[in-house]
Image 1 (cartoon, rainbow, N blue to C red):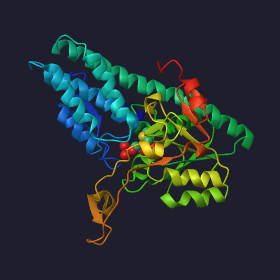
Image 2 (tube, rainbow, N blue to C red; image 1 turned 90 degrees about the horizontal axis):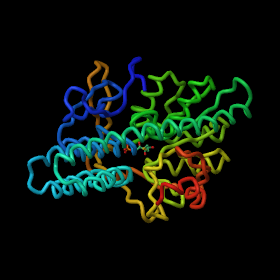
Image 3 (tube, rainbow, N blue to C red; image 1 turned 60 degrees about the horizontal axis):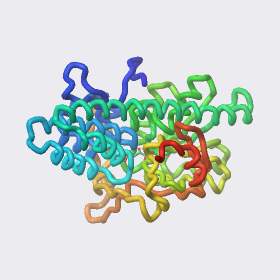
Image 4 (spheres, helix red, strand yellow; image 1 turned 135 degrees about the vertical axis):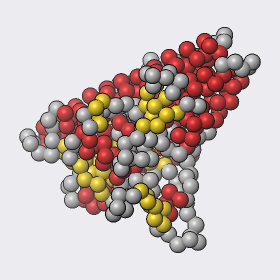
Length: 371
Ligand code: MRU
């Protein structure tokens, strides 16, 4: 995607030093666009845990590169395989809900286990990491094409020149992937084709990924949007101001239950009550074929209370600052994700096409990938 007219991905291998992974530090956005260097697997684990890199696709790609850094670290070690296994565990433990993380680490480990030497492991892990990142970008591009035709049909039905209002929650934009995004890919594609779209952006407490990240990237691309408080969506839906909801996903079970940022379930309920289509966009790396009940089987990350009690922003002199919202003694519960049952999901937008959130349709869309 373009940042001030210059094309960027969210992470890449430094062309000057192939031992360094470059990331966009998302904790600095939207106030400052900063690129950070990641040189060790420990630094990658910290970047994941502290959410300098975040979003399902991007944490998968970051973990892929994390395994490459692990392979570099294993050079000269007598038992390079056990070092790789330890690093795989460290990376997998950083974030529990988005399945892309474990998926990418396991994919890397599958090829690394058969390497004869640490040198071979370095080459294999680098190739694997680049492939994971490229595939993520390509999957999101295709999600954009499929989702765009949905928006285009909706625009035809609504009438020429009428704006399609799309509500999204959190950031399933290009910042959450390597490029394009999942929920935003259809929006960017429709906008680029001249279909008039407007996005309602949920602020997404407590970390405000909607207000900070989605709003920023939509603005960079020139997509009309409005940031709303998280509780506003239902009201807008009741008043005919939402045509379509598209969210991303952190993990989707094989029966179509969707784990996504906390608050997604409430949006799905409101959409259902107002007969508004509720679509979830995801690459197949977010599908967890081993699970069949999202509510009981998907681990829900709980994050530090400070995310809720402290709000970060810039003050009137442009200084980044934090202020406390709550009384000191009040306990805090900070669940990062919730599960939307498949019955509330109108459809899944994937790189292979759009299907309903049912085992049969998901399996038929991905029948070759499963073996
Ligand atoms: O905690 P985060 O920021 O890593 O959460 C992930 C998300 O941004 C959302 O849940 C998103 O909609 C799915 S990730 C494409």
